[in-house]
Image (cartoon, rainbow, N blue to C red):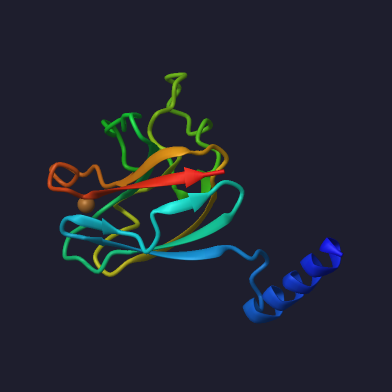
Length: 152
Ligand SMILES: [Cu+2]
C-alpha cells in the first residue's frame, strides 16, 4: 500500500520535472545588501533541497551554511580553496587543518557576482540550528545572515 503510493508520487514528480534526476525541493535564496532571504526557515532532515542562490544586488556576495555556533574561517590565501561542487563533503576541502569549520556549504564570491545565480543541492543529516551567512568583510555585521532550523 505504502509502496504503491510512493511509486505513484515518484511517477508524478518525475513526469512534472522532466529531465531532473531527483525530486529536490526548490528553495530560491536572495542575497542583497545586506540580507539573505530564504522563503523557508525550517528544513527537514533527509529532504533533498535545491538552493537556487541569486545575487540581485550590486556587489559580490558569498553563501555559507554553518551550524549555529560554528565559526567561519576567513579565507586568508587564495579564492579557490573549495567550491559548491564539494559542498556536501565538507571534510575534503584540502585546508588540512584537521578541523573544517568553514561551512557545510560554501559558494564563494567569485561565483556570486551581481546578477549571478548558482544552484546547489544539499540534504541535511542532523537536526539543529543553522544559519546562512555572507562573510565578506562587513557583510555579516551588517545583518547579512539568516537563521534556520532543521527538524527530524
Ligand atoms: Cu554579502
